[in-house]
Length: 269
Image (tube, rainbow, N blue to C red; front, side):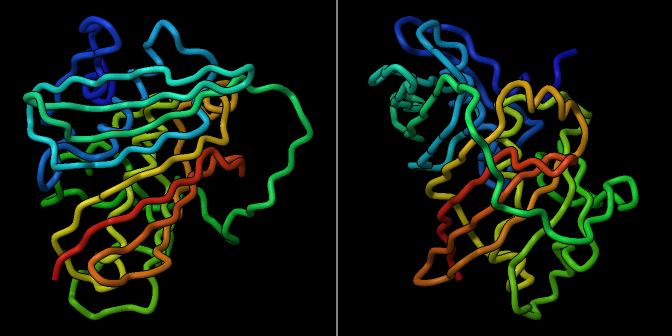
């Protein structure tokens, strides 16, 4: 049987630059599907396109409306191909209406001088020493991940007692385990609980408006990671006038940054 994620991002050529797909119950969210699988599916449309060159270095998805359960189409068009980079314009439609737009940049990587300035959080225990987050009562998509939060960074209790930060730190992998590739990394970059839930310790109506992911890993690095847990960290920088942001990082278990991601989220009180 295919992995649930592979089923969620499964696309079939639909003529021209179009690909046909459908949502799956395994990644259902509070309203519509989990946004991470939407991002992964839009990235997969480029990965499957016969004109694609190189590997992804950036992906932006703008959620124009909540997706409905069911079929959708993705239009992935190469806008320009240069010697090193290739730029793509993306649109996801349902019933003839745009539900998400986006862009992607692919590149042909080459060996150069490299340096990693970002540093892992200190004193991170291994995933094997932490307990998996219970998923009872959560949307279906939460059960598709094995999340193990570091001490002091659990998402609850949701008692309405506001805390001073919105930081999360946890190990995460697909459940059941699945070797990491670019679509799974794109999905994991949206697996964070909303920052306002963490800061205010209570749920609120929210919706991601735009999500940008920057891929620092290449295919070889992802293959080396395999299906082991990755470390995910996230925090908000500002909550104001009905919107908050989130900045996040995803690290290999060997201390290499795999991706960084930023999003803007609508909230209502």
